Image 1 (cartoon, one colour):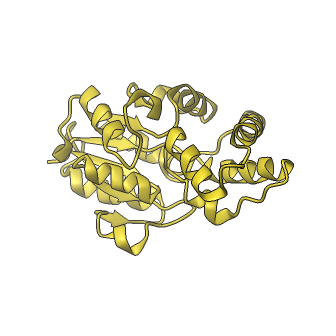
Image 2 (cartoon, helix red, strand yellow):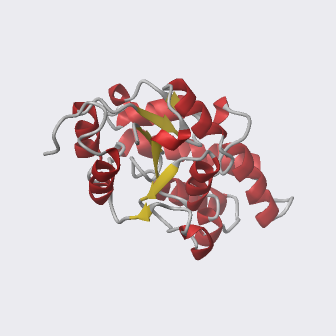
Length: 228
């Protein structure tokens, strides 16, 4: 029986991946370099350490990574703090539903914890989660299973009893490697055909995900509150 739900952050709960992509392209352009959308999409879901190396591999050793990264981060934070962080459709309703049924929840994200916490605050979601694990708190980022294993360990759950919610192929692979059943709600890019079979389901929004979770939890979940 499923008993807990673990959420990814960027692209799944909050609409931040699109902004990050735009800021990286803008920052590279300021230094005379062109980063394609395809290159940026290939980095979605990967933690900071691995994404930097992947970018250098694609762009070449002369790419001014430190300068572009610093400029892109400043612009990214300016936009998040100025524009606010938009919550994905259906998220609040899903969190309310889980809370009413006393279903444990956690966040497992590739984002560094300090920034993840700020995003949650900006989105008005910080109080929703007691357990938040960032990519800088584990040895290996997604697609390694470390961040998921740490998150479920903190809430005292077994992998077989957890449901993961992800937006990216990288996140799907991480959840699967941790032995956790994963529902994918694609954001910028759906999983490739090679990895789609790893997902329990791929749905267009968190509203559809809630219906699946209700069935998977059965009888309203741990709190045994009737569905409604």
